[in-house]
Image (cartoon, rainbow, N blue to C red; front, top):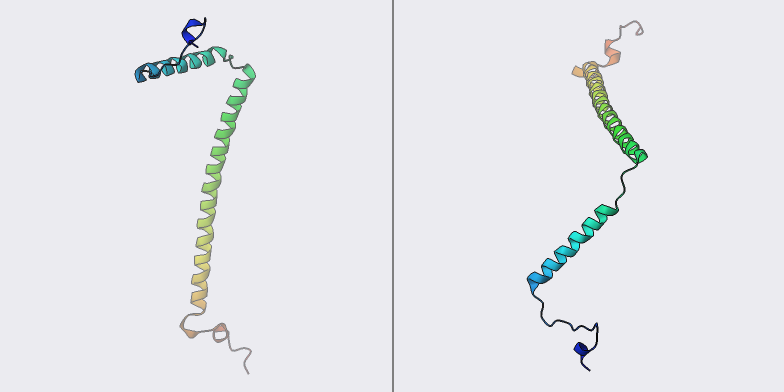
Length: 110
C-alpha cells in the first residue's frame, strides 16, 4: 500500500531540520500571542476604578503600618526608660546593706 498514490495522503519525514523545527515553533508561538492580543477586550471602566481603589487602599495600609511600627518602637523606648529608672531607685534603696527599717526614724522603737 503506497501512501503517495492516495489523495490527501502524506508520509512522515524521517529527518527534520532542527533549524526548520525551531523556526516553525517560533512562528506558532508568535501566532498564538497575536491571537490572544486580538481577543482581549478593552478594560471596563469599573475594572479601572477597582484597580485604582486597590492601589489607594494599599498605600493607606502601608502608611498605617509605618505609623504603628514607629509608635510601637517609641512606646518600647518609653517603657525601657521607666524600667531603668525603677531599677535605679530600687538599687538606691537596697544599696550599702541599708534596709527600709534602718532608714525609718526610731519613733516606733522604745
